Image 1 (cartoon, rainbow, N blue to C red):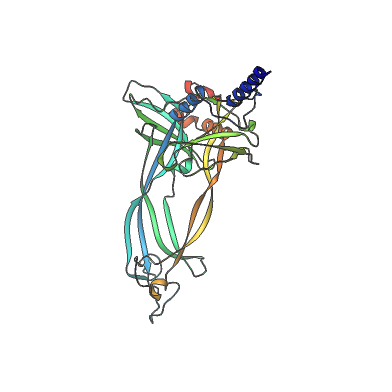
Image 2: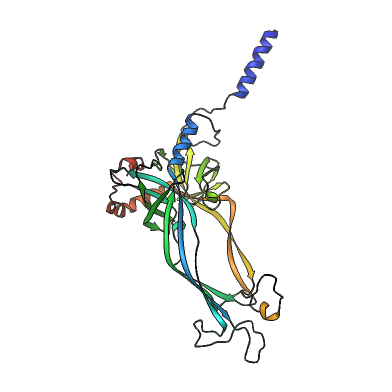
Length: 359
C-alpha cells in the first residue's frame, strides 16, 4: 500500500511539472504556454523577418510673436490687425524667428520577400503602417483666445523640406529604404529595401498566413515591435470589431509597435499564423496651456508676459489597447500594389516568397 502511495505521489508531481497541452481542434488558441525548442525557433524566424523603421522629416519653421498691446499701451487678448504683416496681425519688434529642425518616427516593418542578387544589393519588400512614414507637408499653429478657441492669428508655420528613411535589422545594421506605395485610408505602406551583400538579415516571413475571420473573442496573439528602439515581443487577447478589417488586442502597445506583425497560434506552438499588422494604440487628446515663448525659465511674471498664453492640443498614447489591421485588408493592399511592385521587378503571383499569400 505504501508503494502505491509513492506511485500516486510521483504521478501527481510528474503531472504538475509537465506542460499542459490541449488536443488539436483546428482553431486558434486561447492561451499559449511558451515552450522550448521549436517554439523558440518560431520566434527567432519572426524576429529575423522584422525590422525597425526610422523615418525622419526635416522642417523649416517660422515663429511669429505678436504685439499684444493697443495703440494706447493697454494689454489685449488678441493683436490688432496689420495688412503689412505676414500674418495679417501686428507683430512685436523682432517678432519673426526662423529655425530648422527634425524629428524621427520609429515603427516596425515585416519583410515579405527578398530577391538575392550577385550585385552589391539584394532587393526586399516590407510592409508597415502609412502613418509611420508620413507627416503633413505644412503645419500651421494658430493662437487661441481666452476660452481656448482657435483664432485666425498665425503663431507658427512649419514646412517640410526633406525626409530620410532607413530600416535597421535585429543585428543593428542599417539598410536604406524608399516608399513604394502608400494608402492612408487603410494605413499601410510598402517599402523597398536595398540590403547590402552579404548581409544575412532580414529574411522574408516564412510562416503561414492566417485568417482574421477565424479569430474569436479571447484568442491569444503575439505582437513584435520596437518600443524605445528595442525589439520587443508582447501578447494579449483579441476583441473583435464590427469592422471586419480590424480587431483589437488587450496588450501594452506603445510607440514603435506600429507596423509590427501580429501572429496567432493554431493548435500550439510553433504553429504561428500571420493575422495582421499592428496599427498602434488608442490615444487621448489633452489641451495644455503654453506660456509666452519670451518667458524664460526663472523670469519674473508680468501682465505683458502672461497676456499671451496659448492652448495646444497633444495626443497621448493609452497603453493597453492595440488596434490591428486584419490580414485580409493587408492582402487586398498587396494585390492593389501589384503594378508598382512589378515596376521594381516583383511579381506577387510568381515570387517564391509570396506564394503563401495565395495570389
